[in-house]
Structures are given as structure tokens and as C-alpha cells.
Length: 347
Image 1 (cartoon, rainbow, N blue to C red):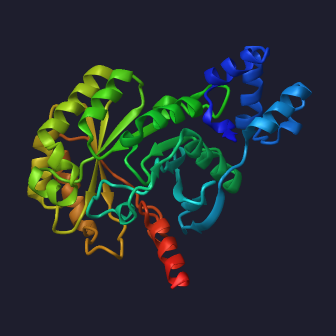
Image 2 (image 1 turned 180 degrees about the horizontal axis):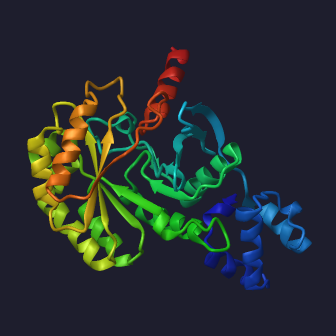
């Protein structure tokens, strides 16, 4: 049975027109589901009885189950969700002074193999469909009783490796009659699949693009991120520049600070030289330790020195507030730990 959450407003209108209903009925259904959070067609009182029956027979309104929930002392909530086929995916709700953001997963597992990332501990099993990403938002709002105002497609997986489904997901959650999450409140992250960056630019969608950079030169980035061997920094920076020229949207460079790896003042100077002239800013990220890896977070004093150096070099830079470090908040951590626990129980 198809999930109702897999259909954009336009797709739903076409289906309803073929059944003899007006386009306005699509708006009514979106209102019931995405605003009123009613997932039982029998309770959609202004919808004709025969259409309600049709919906029950042909569409699923079910949400994922919760395999595990962790709540940080800072209010960050991480959910491990169970999809209909039993696969587990994570999402993280974070609170900011500008609203609540949800980090959404786009793939079950990840094949990018970044050396520091827990997501890569479990290889990609499949890409998620649009409804499975939409369902993450709906389940979090149901569980936490909060409205998600911002979305970052930055959880497990490489979003541009699943671009069609990610764009369909964005279309659905951006709808004015539905969840109404503004396009400028949506960020898509990539580790640097250059052809897909060009493809995304051609869509001219004014969303936010974040590049998981994490190194100022090819030598360090090759060690940390295998994707760099296919698309080295010169090609990546050229694609990023084209993205800005095409969309007019400023780029974010995500830079995870790893002790004695990429956090020296020389690295900061190289980073400044690499991105100078681009309409971009750097988001410095304190590392949440992953016990399977030896990487250590940079000392707070070194983070400040790195930040100050970038500022002196004229680079727009922020330090991301550390969230959820007392729970399994790094991408892939909770899923990896859960799977290991299940394996131990089955031994």
C-alpha cells in the first residue's frame, strides 16, 4: 500500500481529478494531515465518505515506530525509528534561539566512508523514499509535541546520492498548505559529489547548501574523506562557486575540528585562502566522540584560536553550539550502537 506522505500536492491533485474530485480536495487533505495531524480518513469530516473509504483502501497513513529515544540535558532529542521494512534510521531534534531544527536522515547507512563518522560504520542498505523522510518530521512532532521550523538533511547518508527523493521530500514539506517549512529554512548537506552539485544548481531552488569540508587541503581531506580522491578541492570549490552564481544562495562550509589533525593555525590560514572570495561562511563544529575511532575533539582553547585566525583573515565564521554530547548525537551513533546490541543478544 502506498504511503500518503509520498505524494506532493500536485501529484495528489492529479489523482483526485482522475477520480472526479476537485483540486481543492487536495488542499483539504493536506490540511487534515499536515496541519491538523489527523491520520485516520474516518476523522476527516469534510471529506466525502466514498473518498475516505478510497483513502483507507489505497493509502497508508502510518508513521515509523520508535526503537529508542534519548534526551540530552540540553533538550536535544534523538530518535531511532523503525521503518516499515524493519530498517532503523535516526533523526535529531535541536533547540535554537530561532526555532527547532530537525536533522533528517536520507539513507539507511552510508557508503561515503568518512574516517570520523559513525554513519559509515553501517554500510548503505538503501536510499529512503520521500515519505520516509517526511515521516521523520511527523513522528518527531507527534512524539515531542513541538513544531519543526527548520530542517537539515544532514543525518545518515549522502543526500545528493538520493537527490530525486530528497527534492520530492522538500517539495512536500515546503507546501504552504502543509507543513509550510520555508525553503530558506531547509539545508541540504553534501560531502562533495561535484556532478550532483551542478545538477542541484540547475534546479535553482533557493535552499541552503552546506559542504562537509573538514580539511583545508587535499592531503588531509584524502585521509578523512575518500570522496575527495574522486572530486578534489579544486573541482569542489569550482562547483560551489557555480552554485552561488546560479542560485544566489550563500554556501556554508562545515568544518569538524579534530585535535592535531585539522585544527592548527596553518590549517586555518589554508582554509581562509581556499574559500576567500566566495560568498560563504564557515561553521566550526566541535567533534562528538565516536568510541570506534581514535579521533579526539579539539581543545576549547584551540577552537577559539582557529576561530580568531579565520576572523582576522576576513572569513565569516561561527562556532556551532555543542549539542547532545551526553547522548549518542553524532550521525549514525545510535543506530550503530543499537545494531551492535541486537547482534550481542543474538550471539
